[in-house]
Length: 304
Image 1: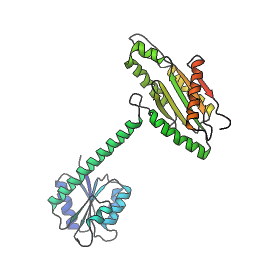
Image 2: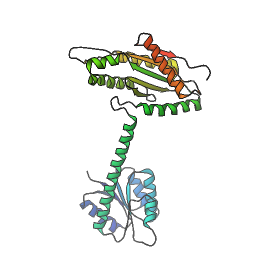
Image 3: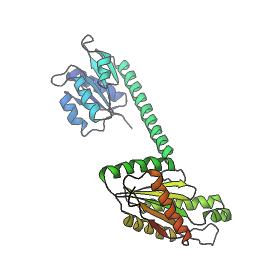
Image 4: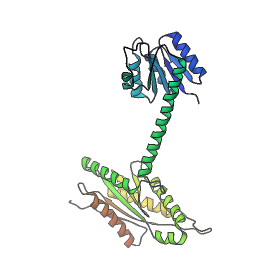
């Protein structure tokens, strides 16, 4: 795929010769005779590189560079024939990727262009890897839900927001019933199938603002912002029912279902994190004591 390049130069002879050279070098070239025209073209072109003169009527090349870097992820190489008027540092300070002097030696320009593009490719790959590492740091690989470390970070933020704006916040804790027996009977590979399926199912039952987490082992948590306890119970029942309808086949010809014990509670404004999470945990154990495969709700304390 050819790199889309925009050449901005008010001298038509220089502009045309540069476009022809870059075209022969394998680039897809567009041209503009002014910075103003270039900004109009950038709205429709999928440009990766701009090569611009500095001295032009109206907006100059450094001002153009500044405008481009504010709105686009585009590399800019600036050119000038006035070495005493502008410095490399000034161009780089505006966001330029390189700085070349006129008269332009085309082979030198091509080397600089290729270096800038290599650096761009390296930067994009680095950013992609950093984003992936950040995702892995907060994500449980098996279920693709957030992990417990991110749960506490997000819960703290939601509690602070609830306190600031006095809105509802609810928390759900879910545990797979008799999961140890399932693992012991059918093996951890089949157990992982159950965990992954439940993770996807929980996520599918939630709103965009809700977030689900693998809390540890066979336990999951869900944070429900702007949600009162009664509404959270409705969501929990939907998850529990949906999971109960999923069929697993750990052994050929055998169909099994798994169930969840769910605890739900509502945040009491001003209470601390430990009390909030502990109450959800107690609600979940109420479900265990009540025969499992059910949802239990514990009211928040009236005063904290």
